Image 1: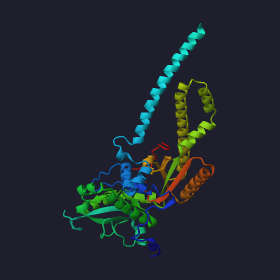
Image 2: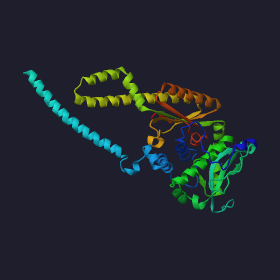
Image 3: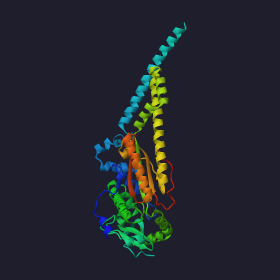
Image 4: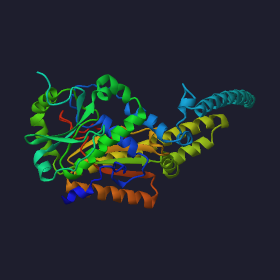
Length: 121
Length: 287
């Protein structure tokens, strides 16, 4: 039959046909869809599949090299329990800045009060 | 009753249902199952043909399979096989796709399920006939929208002028507040656009669903995902849907609006085959 010519059982082509695809999300798409969607018919076996988002991140780690993963901002496994070292640095810096501002404002406030007193005289 | 139709060490992996009429008119070639050398089987039950394959119990029993799905490499290959076969079925037939890992231990429980679901399956064939599922993802470069708010809003201009007149120390906090304000406005703008877009596409579709936006560490993109939605369309709807999104995409490119579009499909109707009267919208577009 003619339409059967389209089938190549051994083919390893990417599973998804795309109208306009960046290529990066097809893996996540397929996993999310087949693991999470589709008709739920209660088979005789109950599977507990981890949250798809977590799964896809794990899989991304497998398929991408560590460098590539870090390029995408995935580096939390190094900095557990906080997601990234950079975030911690920002928090520290933020704290320091707030302290500095408080000091400056205090100094400025004192100065202003003195000026006000002076002009009232 | 003892099971006679299969070896005791094999289970039944069920992929999908297709209408028997379509299948007999245009049968599929021989294809390997999820666990070669077992082949895909097409089991005709009246008007319903079940697409299955036999799988070994020592890998697919509940306890064994639970361990297997935690092995990402294994899961990835098998999930792709499942999806790949579904695409092939979808090229030729109306298909009701089942979730990965739908497995029956005996011919008896399998037959009982088909008998029980027969009416629903036939209804779904009717509903899904000649329809496709398309997935749209919209990404937005939030910074671009924030800059736009900062540059093009009178309210912002006034606020900026007010801040310039303040003491230096206070300026820091006020500027921060202003940045938050710009961000809120930008998020609002993005959300409104996505909602409007979705509402329009919904009017072209038979059914829609809005999915969760993925985080950046999943997408690997710099822009935030702002809409992740699926549409069930017939041939006319499909053309209108794709044309509309293409026009939006073109406009966004030409005017550098900060919106990016990604349309994928056609997918088998994974999101719209649910037997529990799904297909109604979960309305959280743009979130």
